[in-house]
Length: 197
Image 1: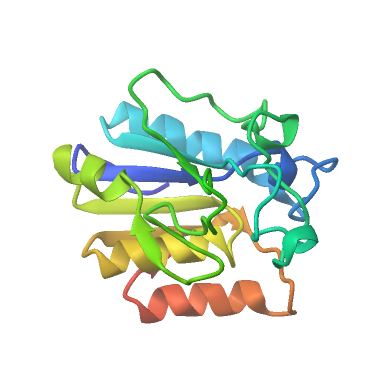
Image 2 (image 1 turned 30 degrees about the vertical axis):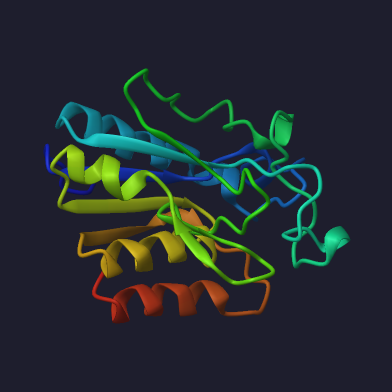
């Protein structure tokens, strides 16, 4: 179990039906198997008074992010659909838990901290860094889906922004679009100064 206190934020990344449910459009193998483990971390974080943040992909129906519109990924997590909802077995957000919705304007929303225009490459910050600084957070714990995409990018951005960061490897799973992507993501996190546990 990770160490939690009032200066720590747990970032629960994209545990949504399209990623975590076997019937999802972009199911991450084993994504449903880690939900109980994620819930244990949420419970521990809440007991310690940590901030718990949930992230969700929330794409429009048409976006350059999707392969049908010129991007890389099958249609997934379209805002307002079952696929975009948090998995029903996941401990639900409380009223004061921040929920960061990514990609609402058609951007690539890999990191919880930033979104990127898929055509121009321009990046913009989400509200997450401001929320964490306002709450006195100095340390982040990252888990969820997928290990080699949104979890990796969130971890790297947290380190870039100066947060002490831990990635909980047994509470995440990779897409492994290319064999070994998951292992390479963990190595990138370590190289950026994150603790991988």
